[in-house]
Length: 210
Image 1 (cartoon, rainbow, N blue to C red):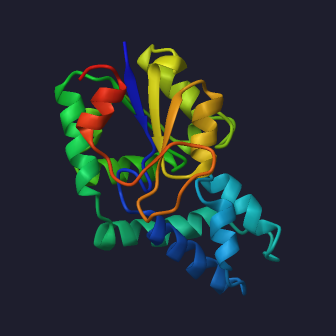
Image 2: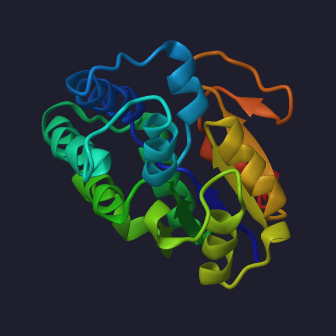
């Protein structure tokens, strides 16, 4: 059996700019302006790992919960500004119609992952979804992808993983998956095969189905 495991942010939905904006707003309230290098360093990380990164750079009052503050802003932004990538929606629907087992392995927290998938009626196409707050280690550790494969009852070697970040693609490789980096804005990967758009026919070809 062949399966496909997708990341969510940057692959299925265009949420990364919203996430960066929410983190920038919250950190600004605490006196810190993120630099471009901060976004690059945390791209693909779980909320917990992102909070840990910025906590080393910002002097925060005791009891500060950056994740909770970010989530309040982020969920408001989802309601008004979140968009799904049309190629992703079409690809997911086509693969599901072909009977391909599908999973999501996302660094997002469960509450945010469900919100994003439900907004675009995508949840019903996935047999398994795994969120960043449901595994012990975030990307680049393999936990998210390994858990997704286990939920599908498919070996990692029988999965094709699609992630838009280097840390995510690295994690999928460690989980034993064939891995493709989705670079929507033209950046090439030195470590992973790279595509710029999702195409169901190409994925089915990679899976040996067409």
